[in-house]
Length: 282
Image 1 (spheres, rainbow, N blue to C red):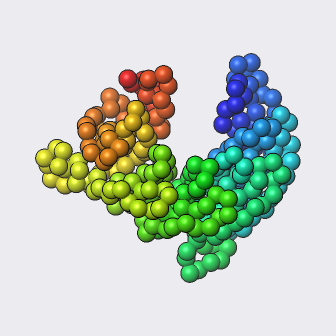
Image 2 (cartoon, rainbow, N blue to C red):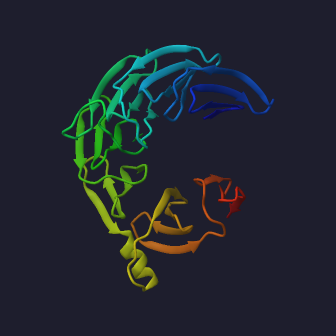
Image 3 (cartoon, one colour):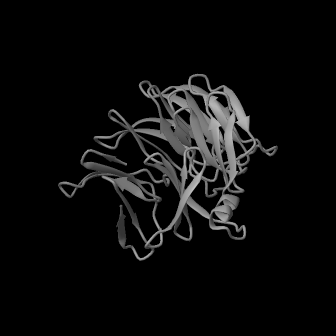
């Protein structure tokens, strides 16, 4: 994560770094012995991260020293799920690999509430939880588990509603709606306030109808909202553009194969291909 001219980095051998990229200078490096396994978040003078043992850390971003450590449930077997963090005005939300969601106050670093969302009948330290990165809109939190999508009240942790689908992408919040893509490639727009589904579209069928061709299974790599449109990037480097009402507007072939997640900078879309070449598109 970057803050002004400093990049903070965690790695898989337990190091945490702060690097000033303008001065090309390493400010500090701390070895915490256990591999980190989360995204990083910054709030005022605190840097927040979690390790593979599901310990939540608050660090001083200027020195790298530990301000507070909050242990949570550890899983003895590691899988591909990476525990993750999200911030709102008051709380740090932490979803660990055991399937527990914690709300921790940003100021005092105290646990406000927690809830376990692992719906397996086999609740034990070796049970595996899968999901996507959590998102919030300062009022509600959206969490994907193995088979379900939950919307929770950010202040109390109460489950407001549960949907029987899981998204293969990180949910995207658009005003009072959130966008998901299910495991069977349905594009789903859901009202975040009442759980009502605005539309649920079979992307495979939409592509087939657009091309007037036989229905085939597509493989989705990533999704983002760009210029009020839904961009769906496929693993074969095609780009599907839907409007927010779910209508497929165009299908484009990217000039180079997509390796990294694209970013948008000043009207340009930037990504690396599999030969580490930088592509910059309008």
